[in-house]
Image (cartoon, rainbow, N blue to C red; front, side, top):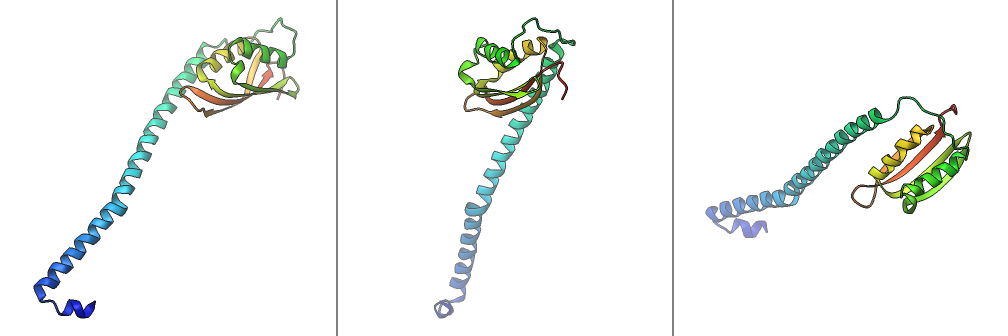
Length: 162
């Protein structure tokens, strides 16, 4: 290759050098710079969407917390927490999403939902709190559809200590 290049006159060698440099720049542009820039833009869009969702959740949590009763009233229903939670979830239309309700002892139950509408879940939780049930643990994960979440909750009688 070197011998072939040396047989060319100076003008052809300059044209080949400039052409080779342009090819290297185009390869760098198309192979490295553009994909990296597009990936950065996608991550930026995800971050903006996550920030917006976080801000909305903070506002919704403040509104939900403010609308709940300040004092917990005792419930006249003498059934177990497990029975009340199971029946209440089904009555609220959450039955198809309800995977399990497990007793945890000491007046606690663990509830698991899959692909439950977030709004319906929150609407179900508000009357529970008024009836003397508190949410000890809540884990939410984005579900498979719009407005759906996978949820795991630990609920306890309000009078029970940790």
